[in-house]
Length: 138
Length: 138
DNA sequence: TTACAAATCGAAATGATTACGATAGAATAG
DNA sequence: CTATTCTATCGTAATCATTTCGATTTGTAA
Image 1 (cartoon, chains in turn brown, blue, green, cyan):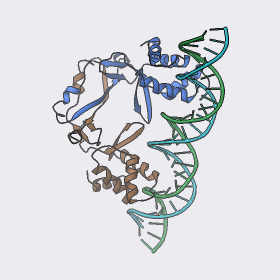
Image 2 (cartoon, rainbow over the protein chains, first blue to last red; image 1 turned 90 degrees about the horizontal axis):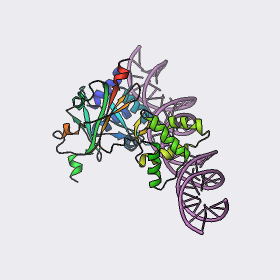
Image 3 (cartoon, rainbow over the protein chains, first blue to last red; image 1 turned 90 degrees about the vertical axis):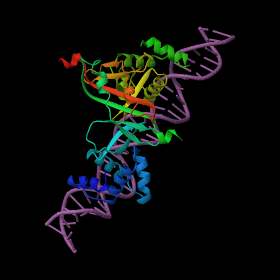
Image 4 (spheres, rainbow over the protein chains, first blue to last red; image 1 turned 30 degrees about the horizontal axis):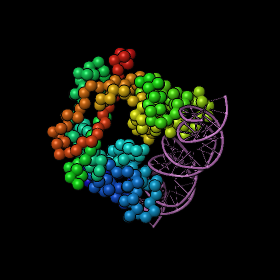
């Protein structure tokens, strides 16, 4: 994902370019994992002293709605990461130290075809947590 | 899980019996699935008009800490259910219609031993959602 | 350049949860 | 049974993340 791609999607959907939006995208593109609104605010304040909370949260919501970002909840706060471009279904390993997310190739659903033969499965949630090789070797 | 078992665990850990605590346990034992603090409050208010939020949240935290309840987060709020007594690790199928939770025998972790050979997996979250046979046949 | 809708600001409101001083109540020993 | 001692609860205020709002600024298309 490039910043320009994100901006293009914004414009296609009738939203305007702003430096702040470009920088928010840049922040998440370079972050390899999930980041909080507070972390984004801290980053943005270095360039835009006095930036409004409204701007932070409004754009996070907008980007998620446009599927430029995806989110999960932890300890009462929402965490965001850049959306995976691959449209295919997949799950993630998430490093609890640095937040890195590794897309996983396999899906565990087939494990349960037998056990849930009489059940009708609609959706599922699956995430692995631990340490990436880099953090584990520290 | 019986109410008495829960009360016994409370006492073993130096906490006292109260009618409110017994009723909170009763509520979750009879509930089919996850319930919010707000839902518990509504239930408790029918018996204890004017019950304090402090009592609701303090006991939810206590019960989770004693592993009488387990929780997950959704839409910015924490949801609680009675803990499964089987000490063995397992996952759940959750019926989206009636809230029934079916413990699953298998764990999908082995699927990823190869893919995550260099990673150190600590925990994982896995839940299946859909319709149980009863609800599906209606 | 002008005009207008959208974006941002600064601040207040909201919703879930936690904390606190004062009072009530459960458990224990005498 | 009563006194004593912690724990639990109440009523309310505080906290934290997030949302909302009126006023102002800014991107952009004509």
